[in-house]
Image (tube, rainbow over all chains, first blue to last red):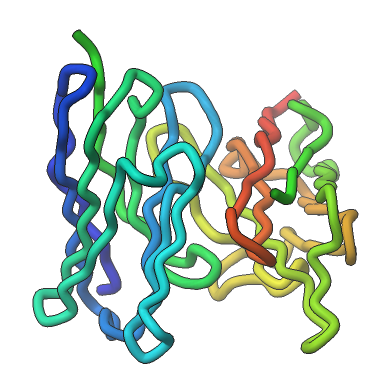
Amino acid sequence: EVQLVEFGGDLVKPGGSLRLSCVGSGFIFSNAWLSWVRQAPGKGLEWVVRIKSEPDGGTIDYAAPVKGRFTISRDDSKNMLYLQMNSLNTEDTAMYYCATGQVFDIWGQGTMVTVSS
Amino acid sequence: DIVMTQSPDSLAVSLGERATINCKSSQSVFHNSNHKNYLAWYQQKPGQPPNLLISWASTRESGVPDRFSGSGSGTDFTLTISSLQAEDVAVYYCQQYYSIPLTFGPGTKVDIK
């Protein structure tokens, strides 16, 4: 079964840090382009960051609101995707999904990040 | 950045009737090199992640019922549900993948009248 599972979401104070993880199975993880997409409560979808596969250059692109604060990485030997989030603020409160592809054809169920004092 | 807009914000349609959602991009998402529109449609039901329905503006994903169809080119696109079923109640998003940053429309909520 093709699957993505995210974990690591938590309640964190403004200015704090958090690392999200996403594990993939049922597909060739090392060939996949991987993104994080977030959704604030009751709001729409916002793309956060994308990392291409190593065969495609491993290029990383960030959305402006997170550039310089968030860092994406991948470990293809473990089928793992990570998102290190620093300097969190209340506007980062959202469900965070990992998703595959140039167009997002596989999604995880999401992990909730709440930034609040 | 390419800004995506959708209309209407919400619509209510009787079971078996047609639902039409419009999506407009602030600049063309048509790539001359491969003659493709970099436009996707997603369905999101409450409490679930989004589900890809259509890519390349009109290519239905495997397993998506044929009552869903996508059309349009350049900057103007349409998602049509030809005969609305109860399980189609959801929010629908368009998304461009022509350029970074990847951007979504604000969503259109579809309900049963």
